[in-house]
Image (cartoon, rainbow, N blue to C red; front, side, top):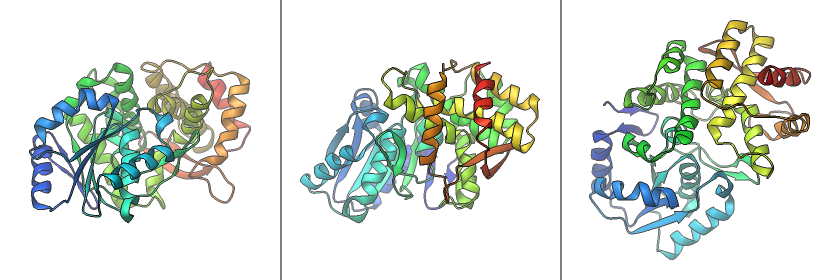
Length: 351
């Protein structure tokens, strides 16, 4: 399997990933090797990783899994751990985990001693095709997603599809949503191919999604323009995810589950504002609801979700900016949506 080149690092898959990791460590005089895991990757992935890495790590750091632990207090714990374990600017942090862990671990590495090297080894489908790629790091502010962070590229991203065998089907589907998004914003043929696939976790599909994301990131690494298209479904999706996270009476949604709802809603808005065909909108809704259970929203839920839109990172000058589709495979950015369309979008989702 070929490697995928990005702006300042490479994404390697399978055997090439193993070789790249060990060669990189062998040629760099790191003072300390730190490995970051959570309780799940410690149990299921660490034994596999120990067979991949030829040199033993100096210390294994552990955090609690889950979006609710992606906050500054976890960072404080890790900064203190790194300091107490004599970490310095020549240390390396290897992040072994899903999107929460690679986001947070990348932020910790980017800020400790004003920045140390880090490597992302994603263990979930979501992190393999999206979260660990592109250099975005950060933590949540309360229940508000990714409000604090920096864009900083890892030394490399290493993909070992065997880690997917440790996941349940719900976690796998969460990553599938991001893969479908890649097709919707850039490649209609890939969208259609994914809808028909019974196995979307093979290395070729993973590599295709990585290539689509990297193509966008290469052209706009700091998200000044084109890279914003990667946020399709995320404006409403993040608000839904945050709302469900902070309300105990609502089922907590995985990231992919929330943006699946967001993509149906924003697909409807695309039809109303950018001329996306009704046939395409119905196809998007049918495609996602085939794999993701419909979420029940009350009128109060919807009102509270819409209030959270003002915190979206893409906002500018007081405006909520959306990524919408003109056609499947053709996304446009910075679209303002009239408030009266939001209830109609939710009505479309619920019908």
